[in-house]
Image 1 (tube, helix red, strand yellow):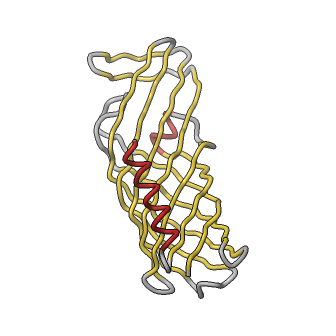
Image 2: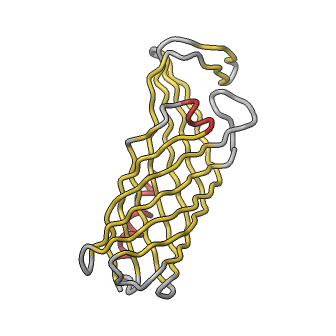
Length: 205
């Protein structure tokens, strides 16, 4: 993880000194879909995003983004557990958590001019997701950690507040392709969730 934080620091520094760039930090609320929604509660209120974008012209940018969302649920529902030599249906009080950390390269296309008060954009990211799935039952805990290739189409709006500060609001669909094994075993280990993100951006033009 120390390499991730070092990369984030470098990203912030390069955005701040670039002549044509945009950096942002967002609070991320996420809604789980498909098998992720079956494992944990459907909504994650714990999330943060960090992004840097560099413009090649007034309408196109390329960049890097990092995120962290935590899905968690306390439940008594039965779960089929496959971990090592353990293959069993387990019931009782459980704490289920999933930490999802996307690291993406992205590209965006913008409508309008750079200093317009409202500016819509669309884009997409491609990269990797580090996903840590954890199941706690009493004093016993099981974990599954995997790297996944993933994609994240996005649509958003930039709302100018001042010359240097902009509000950013976007929605993003995160899809991590199957990789490794989940605690429940099986061939499908995909993860997917919608992100609704709001925060502030600083621009250098």
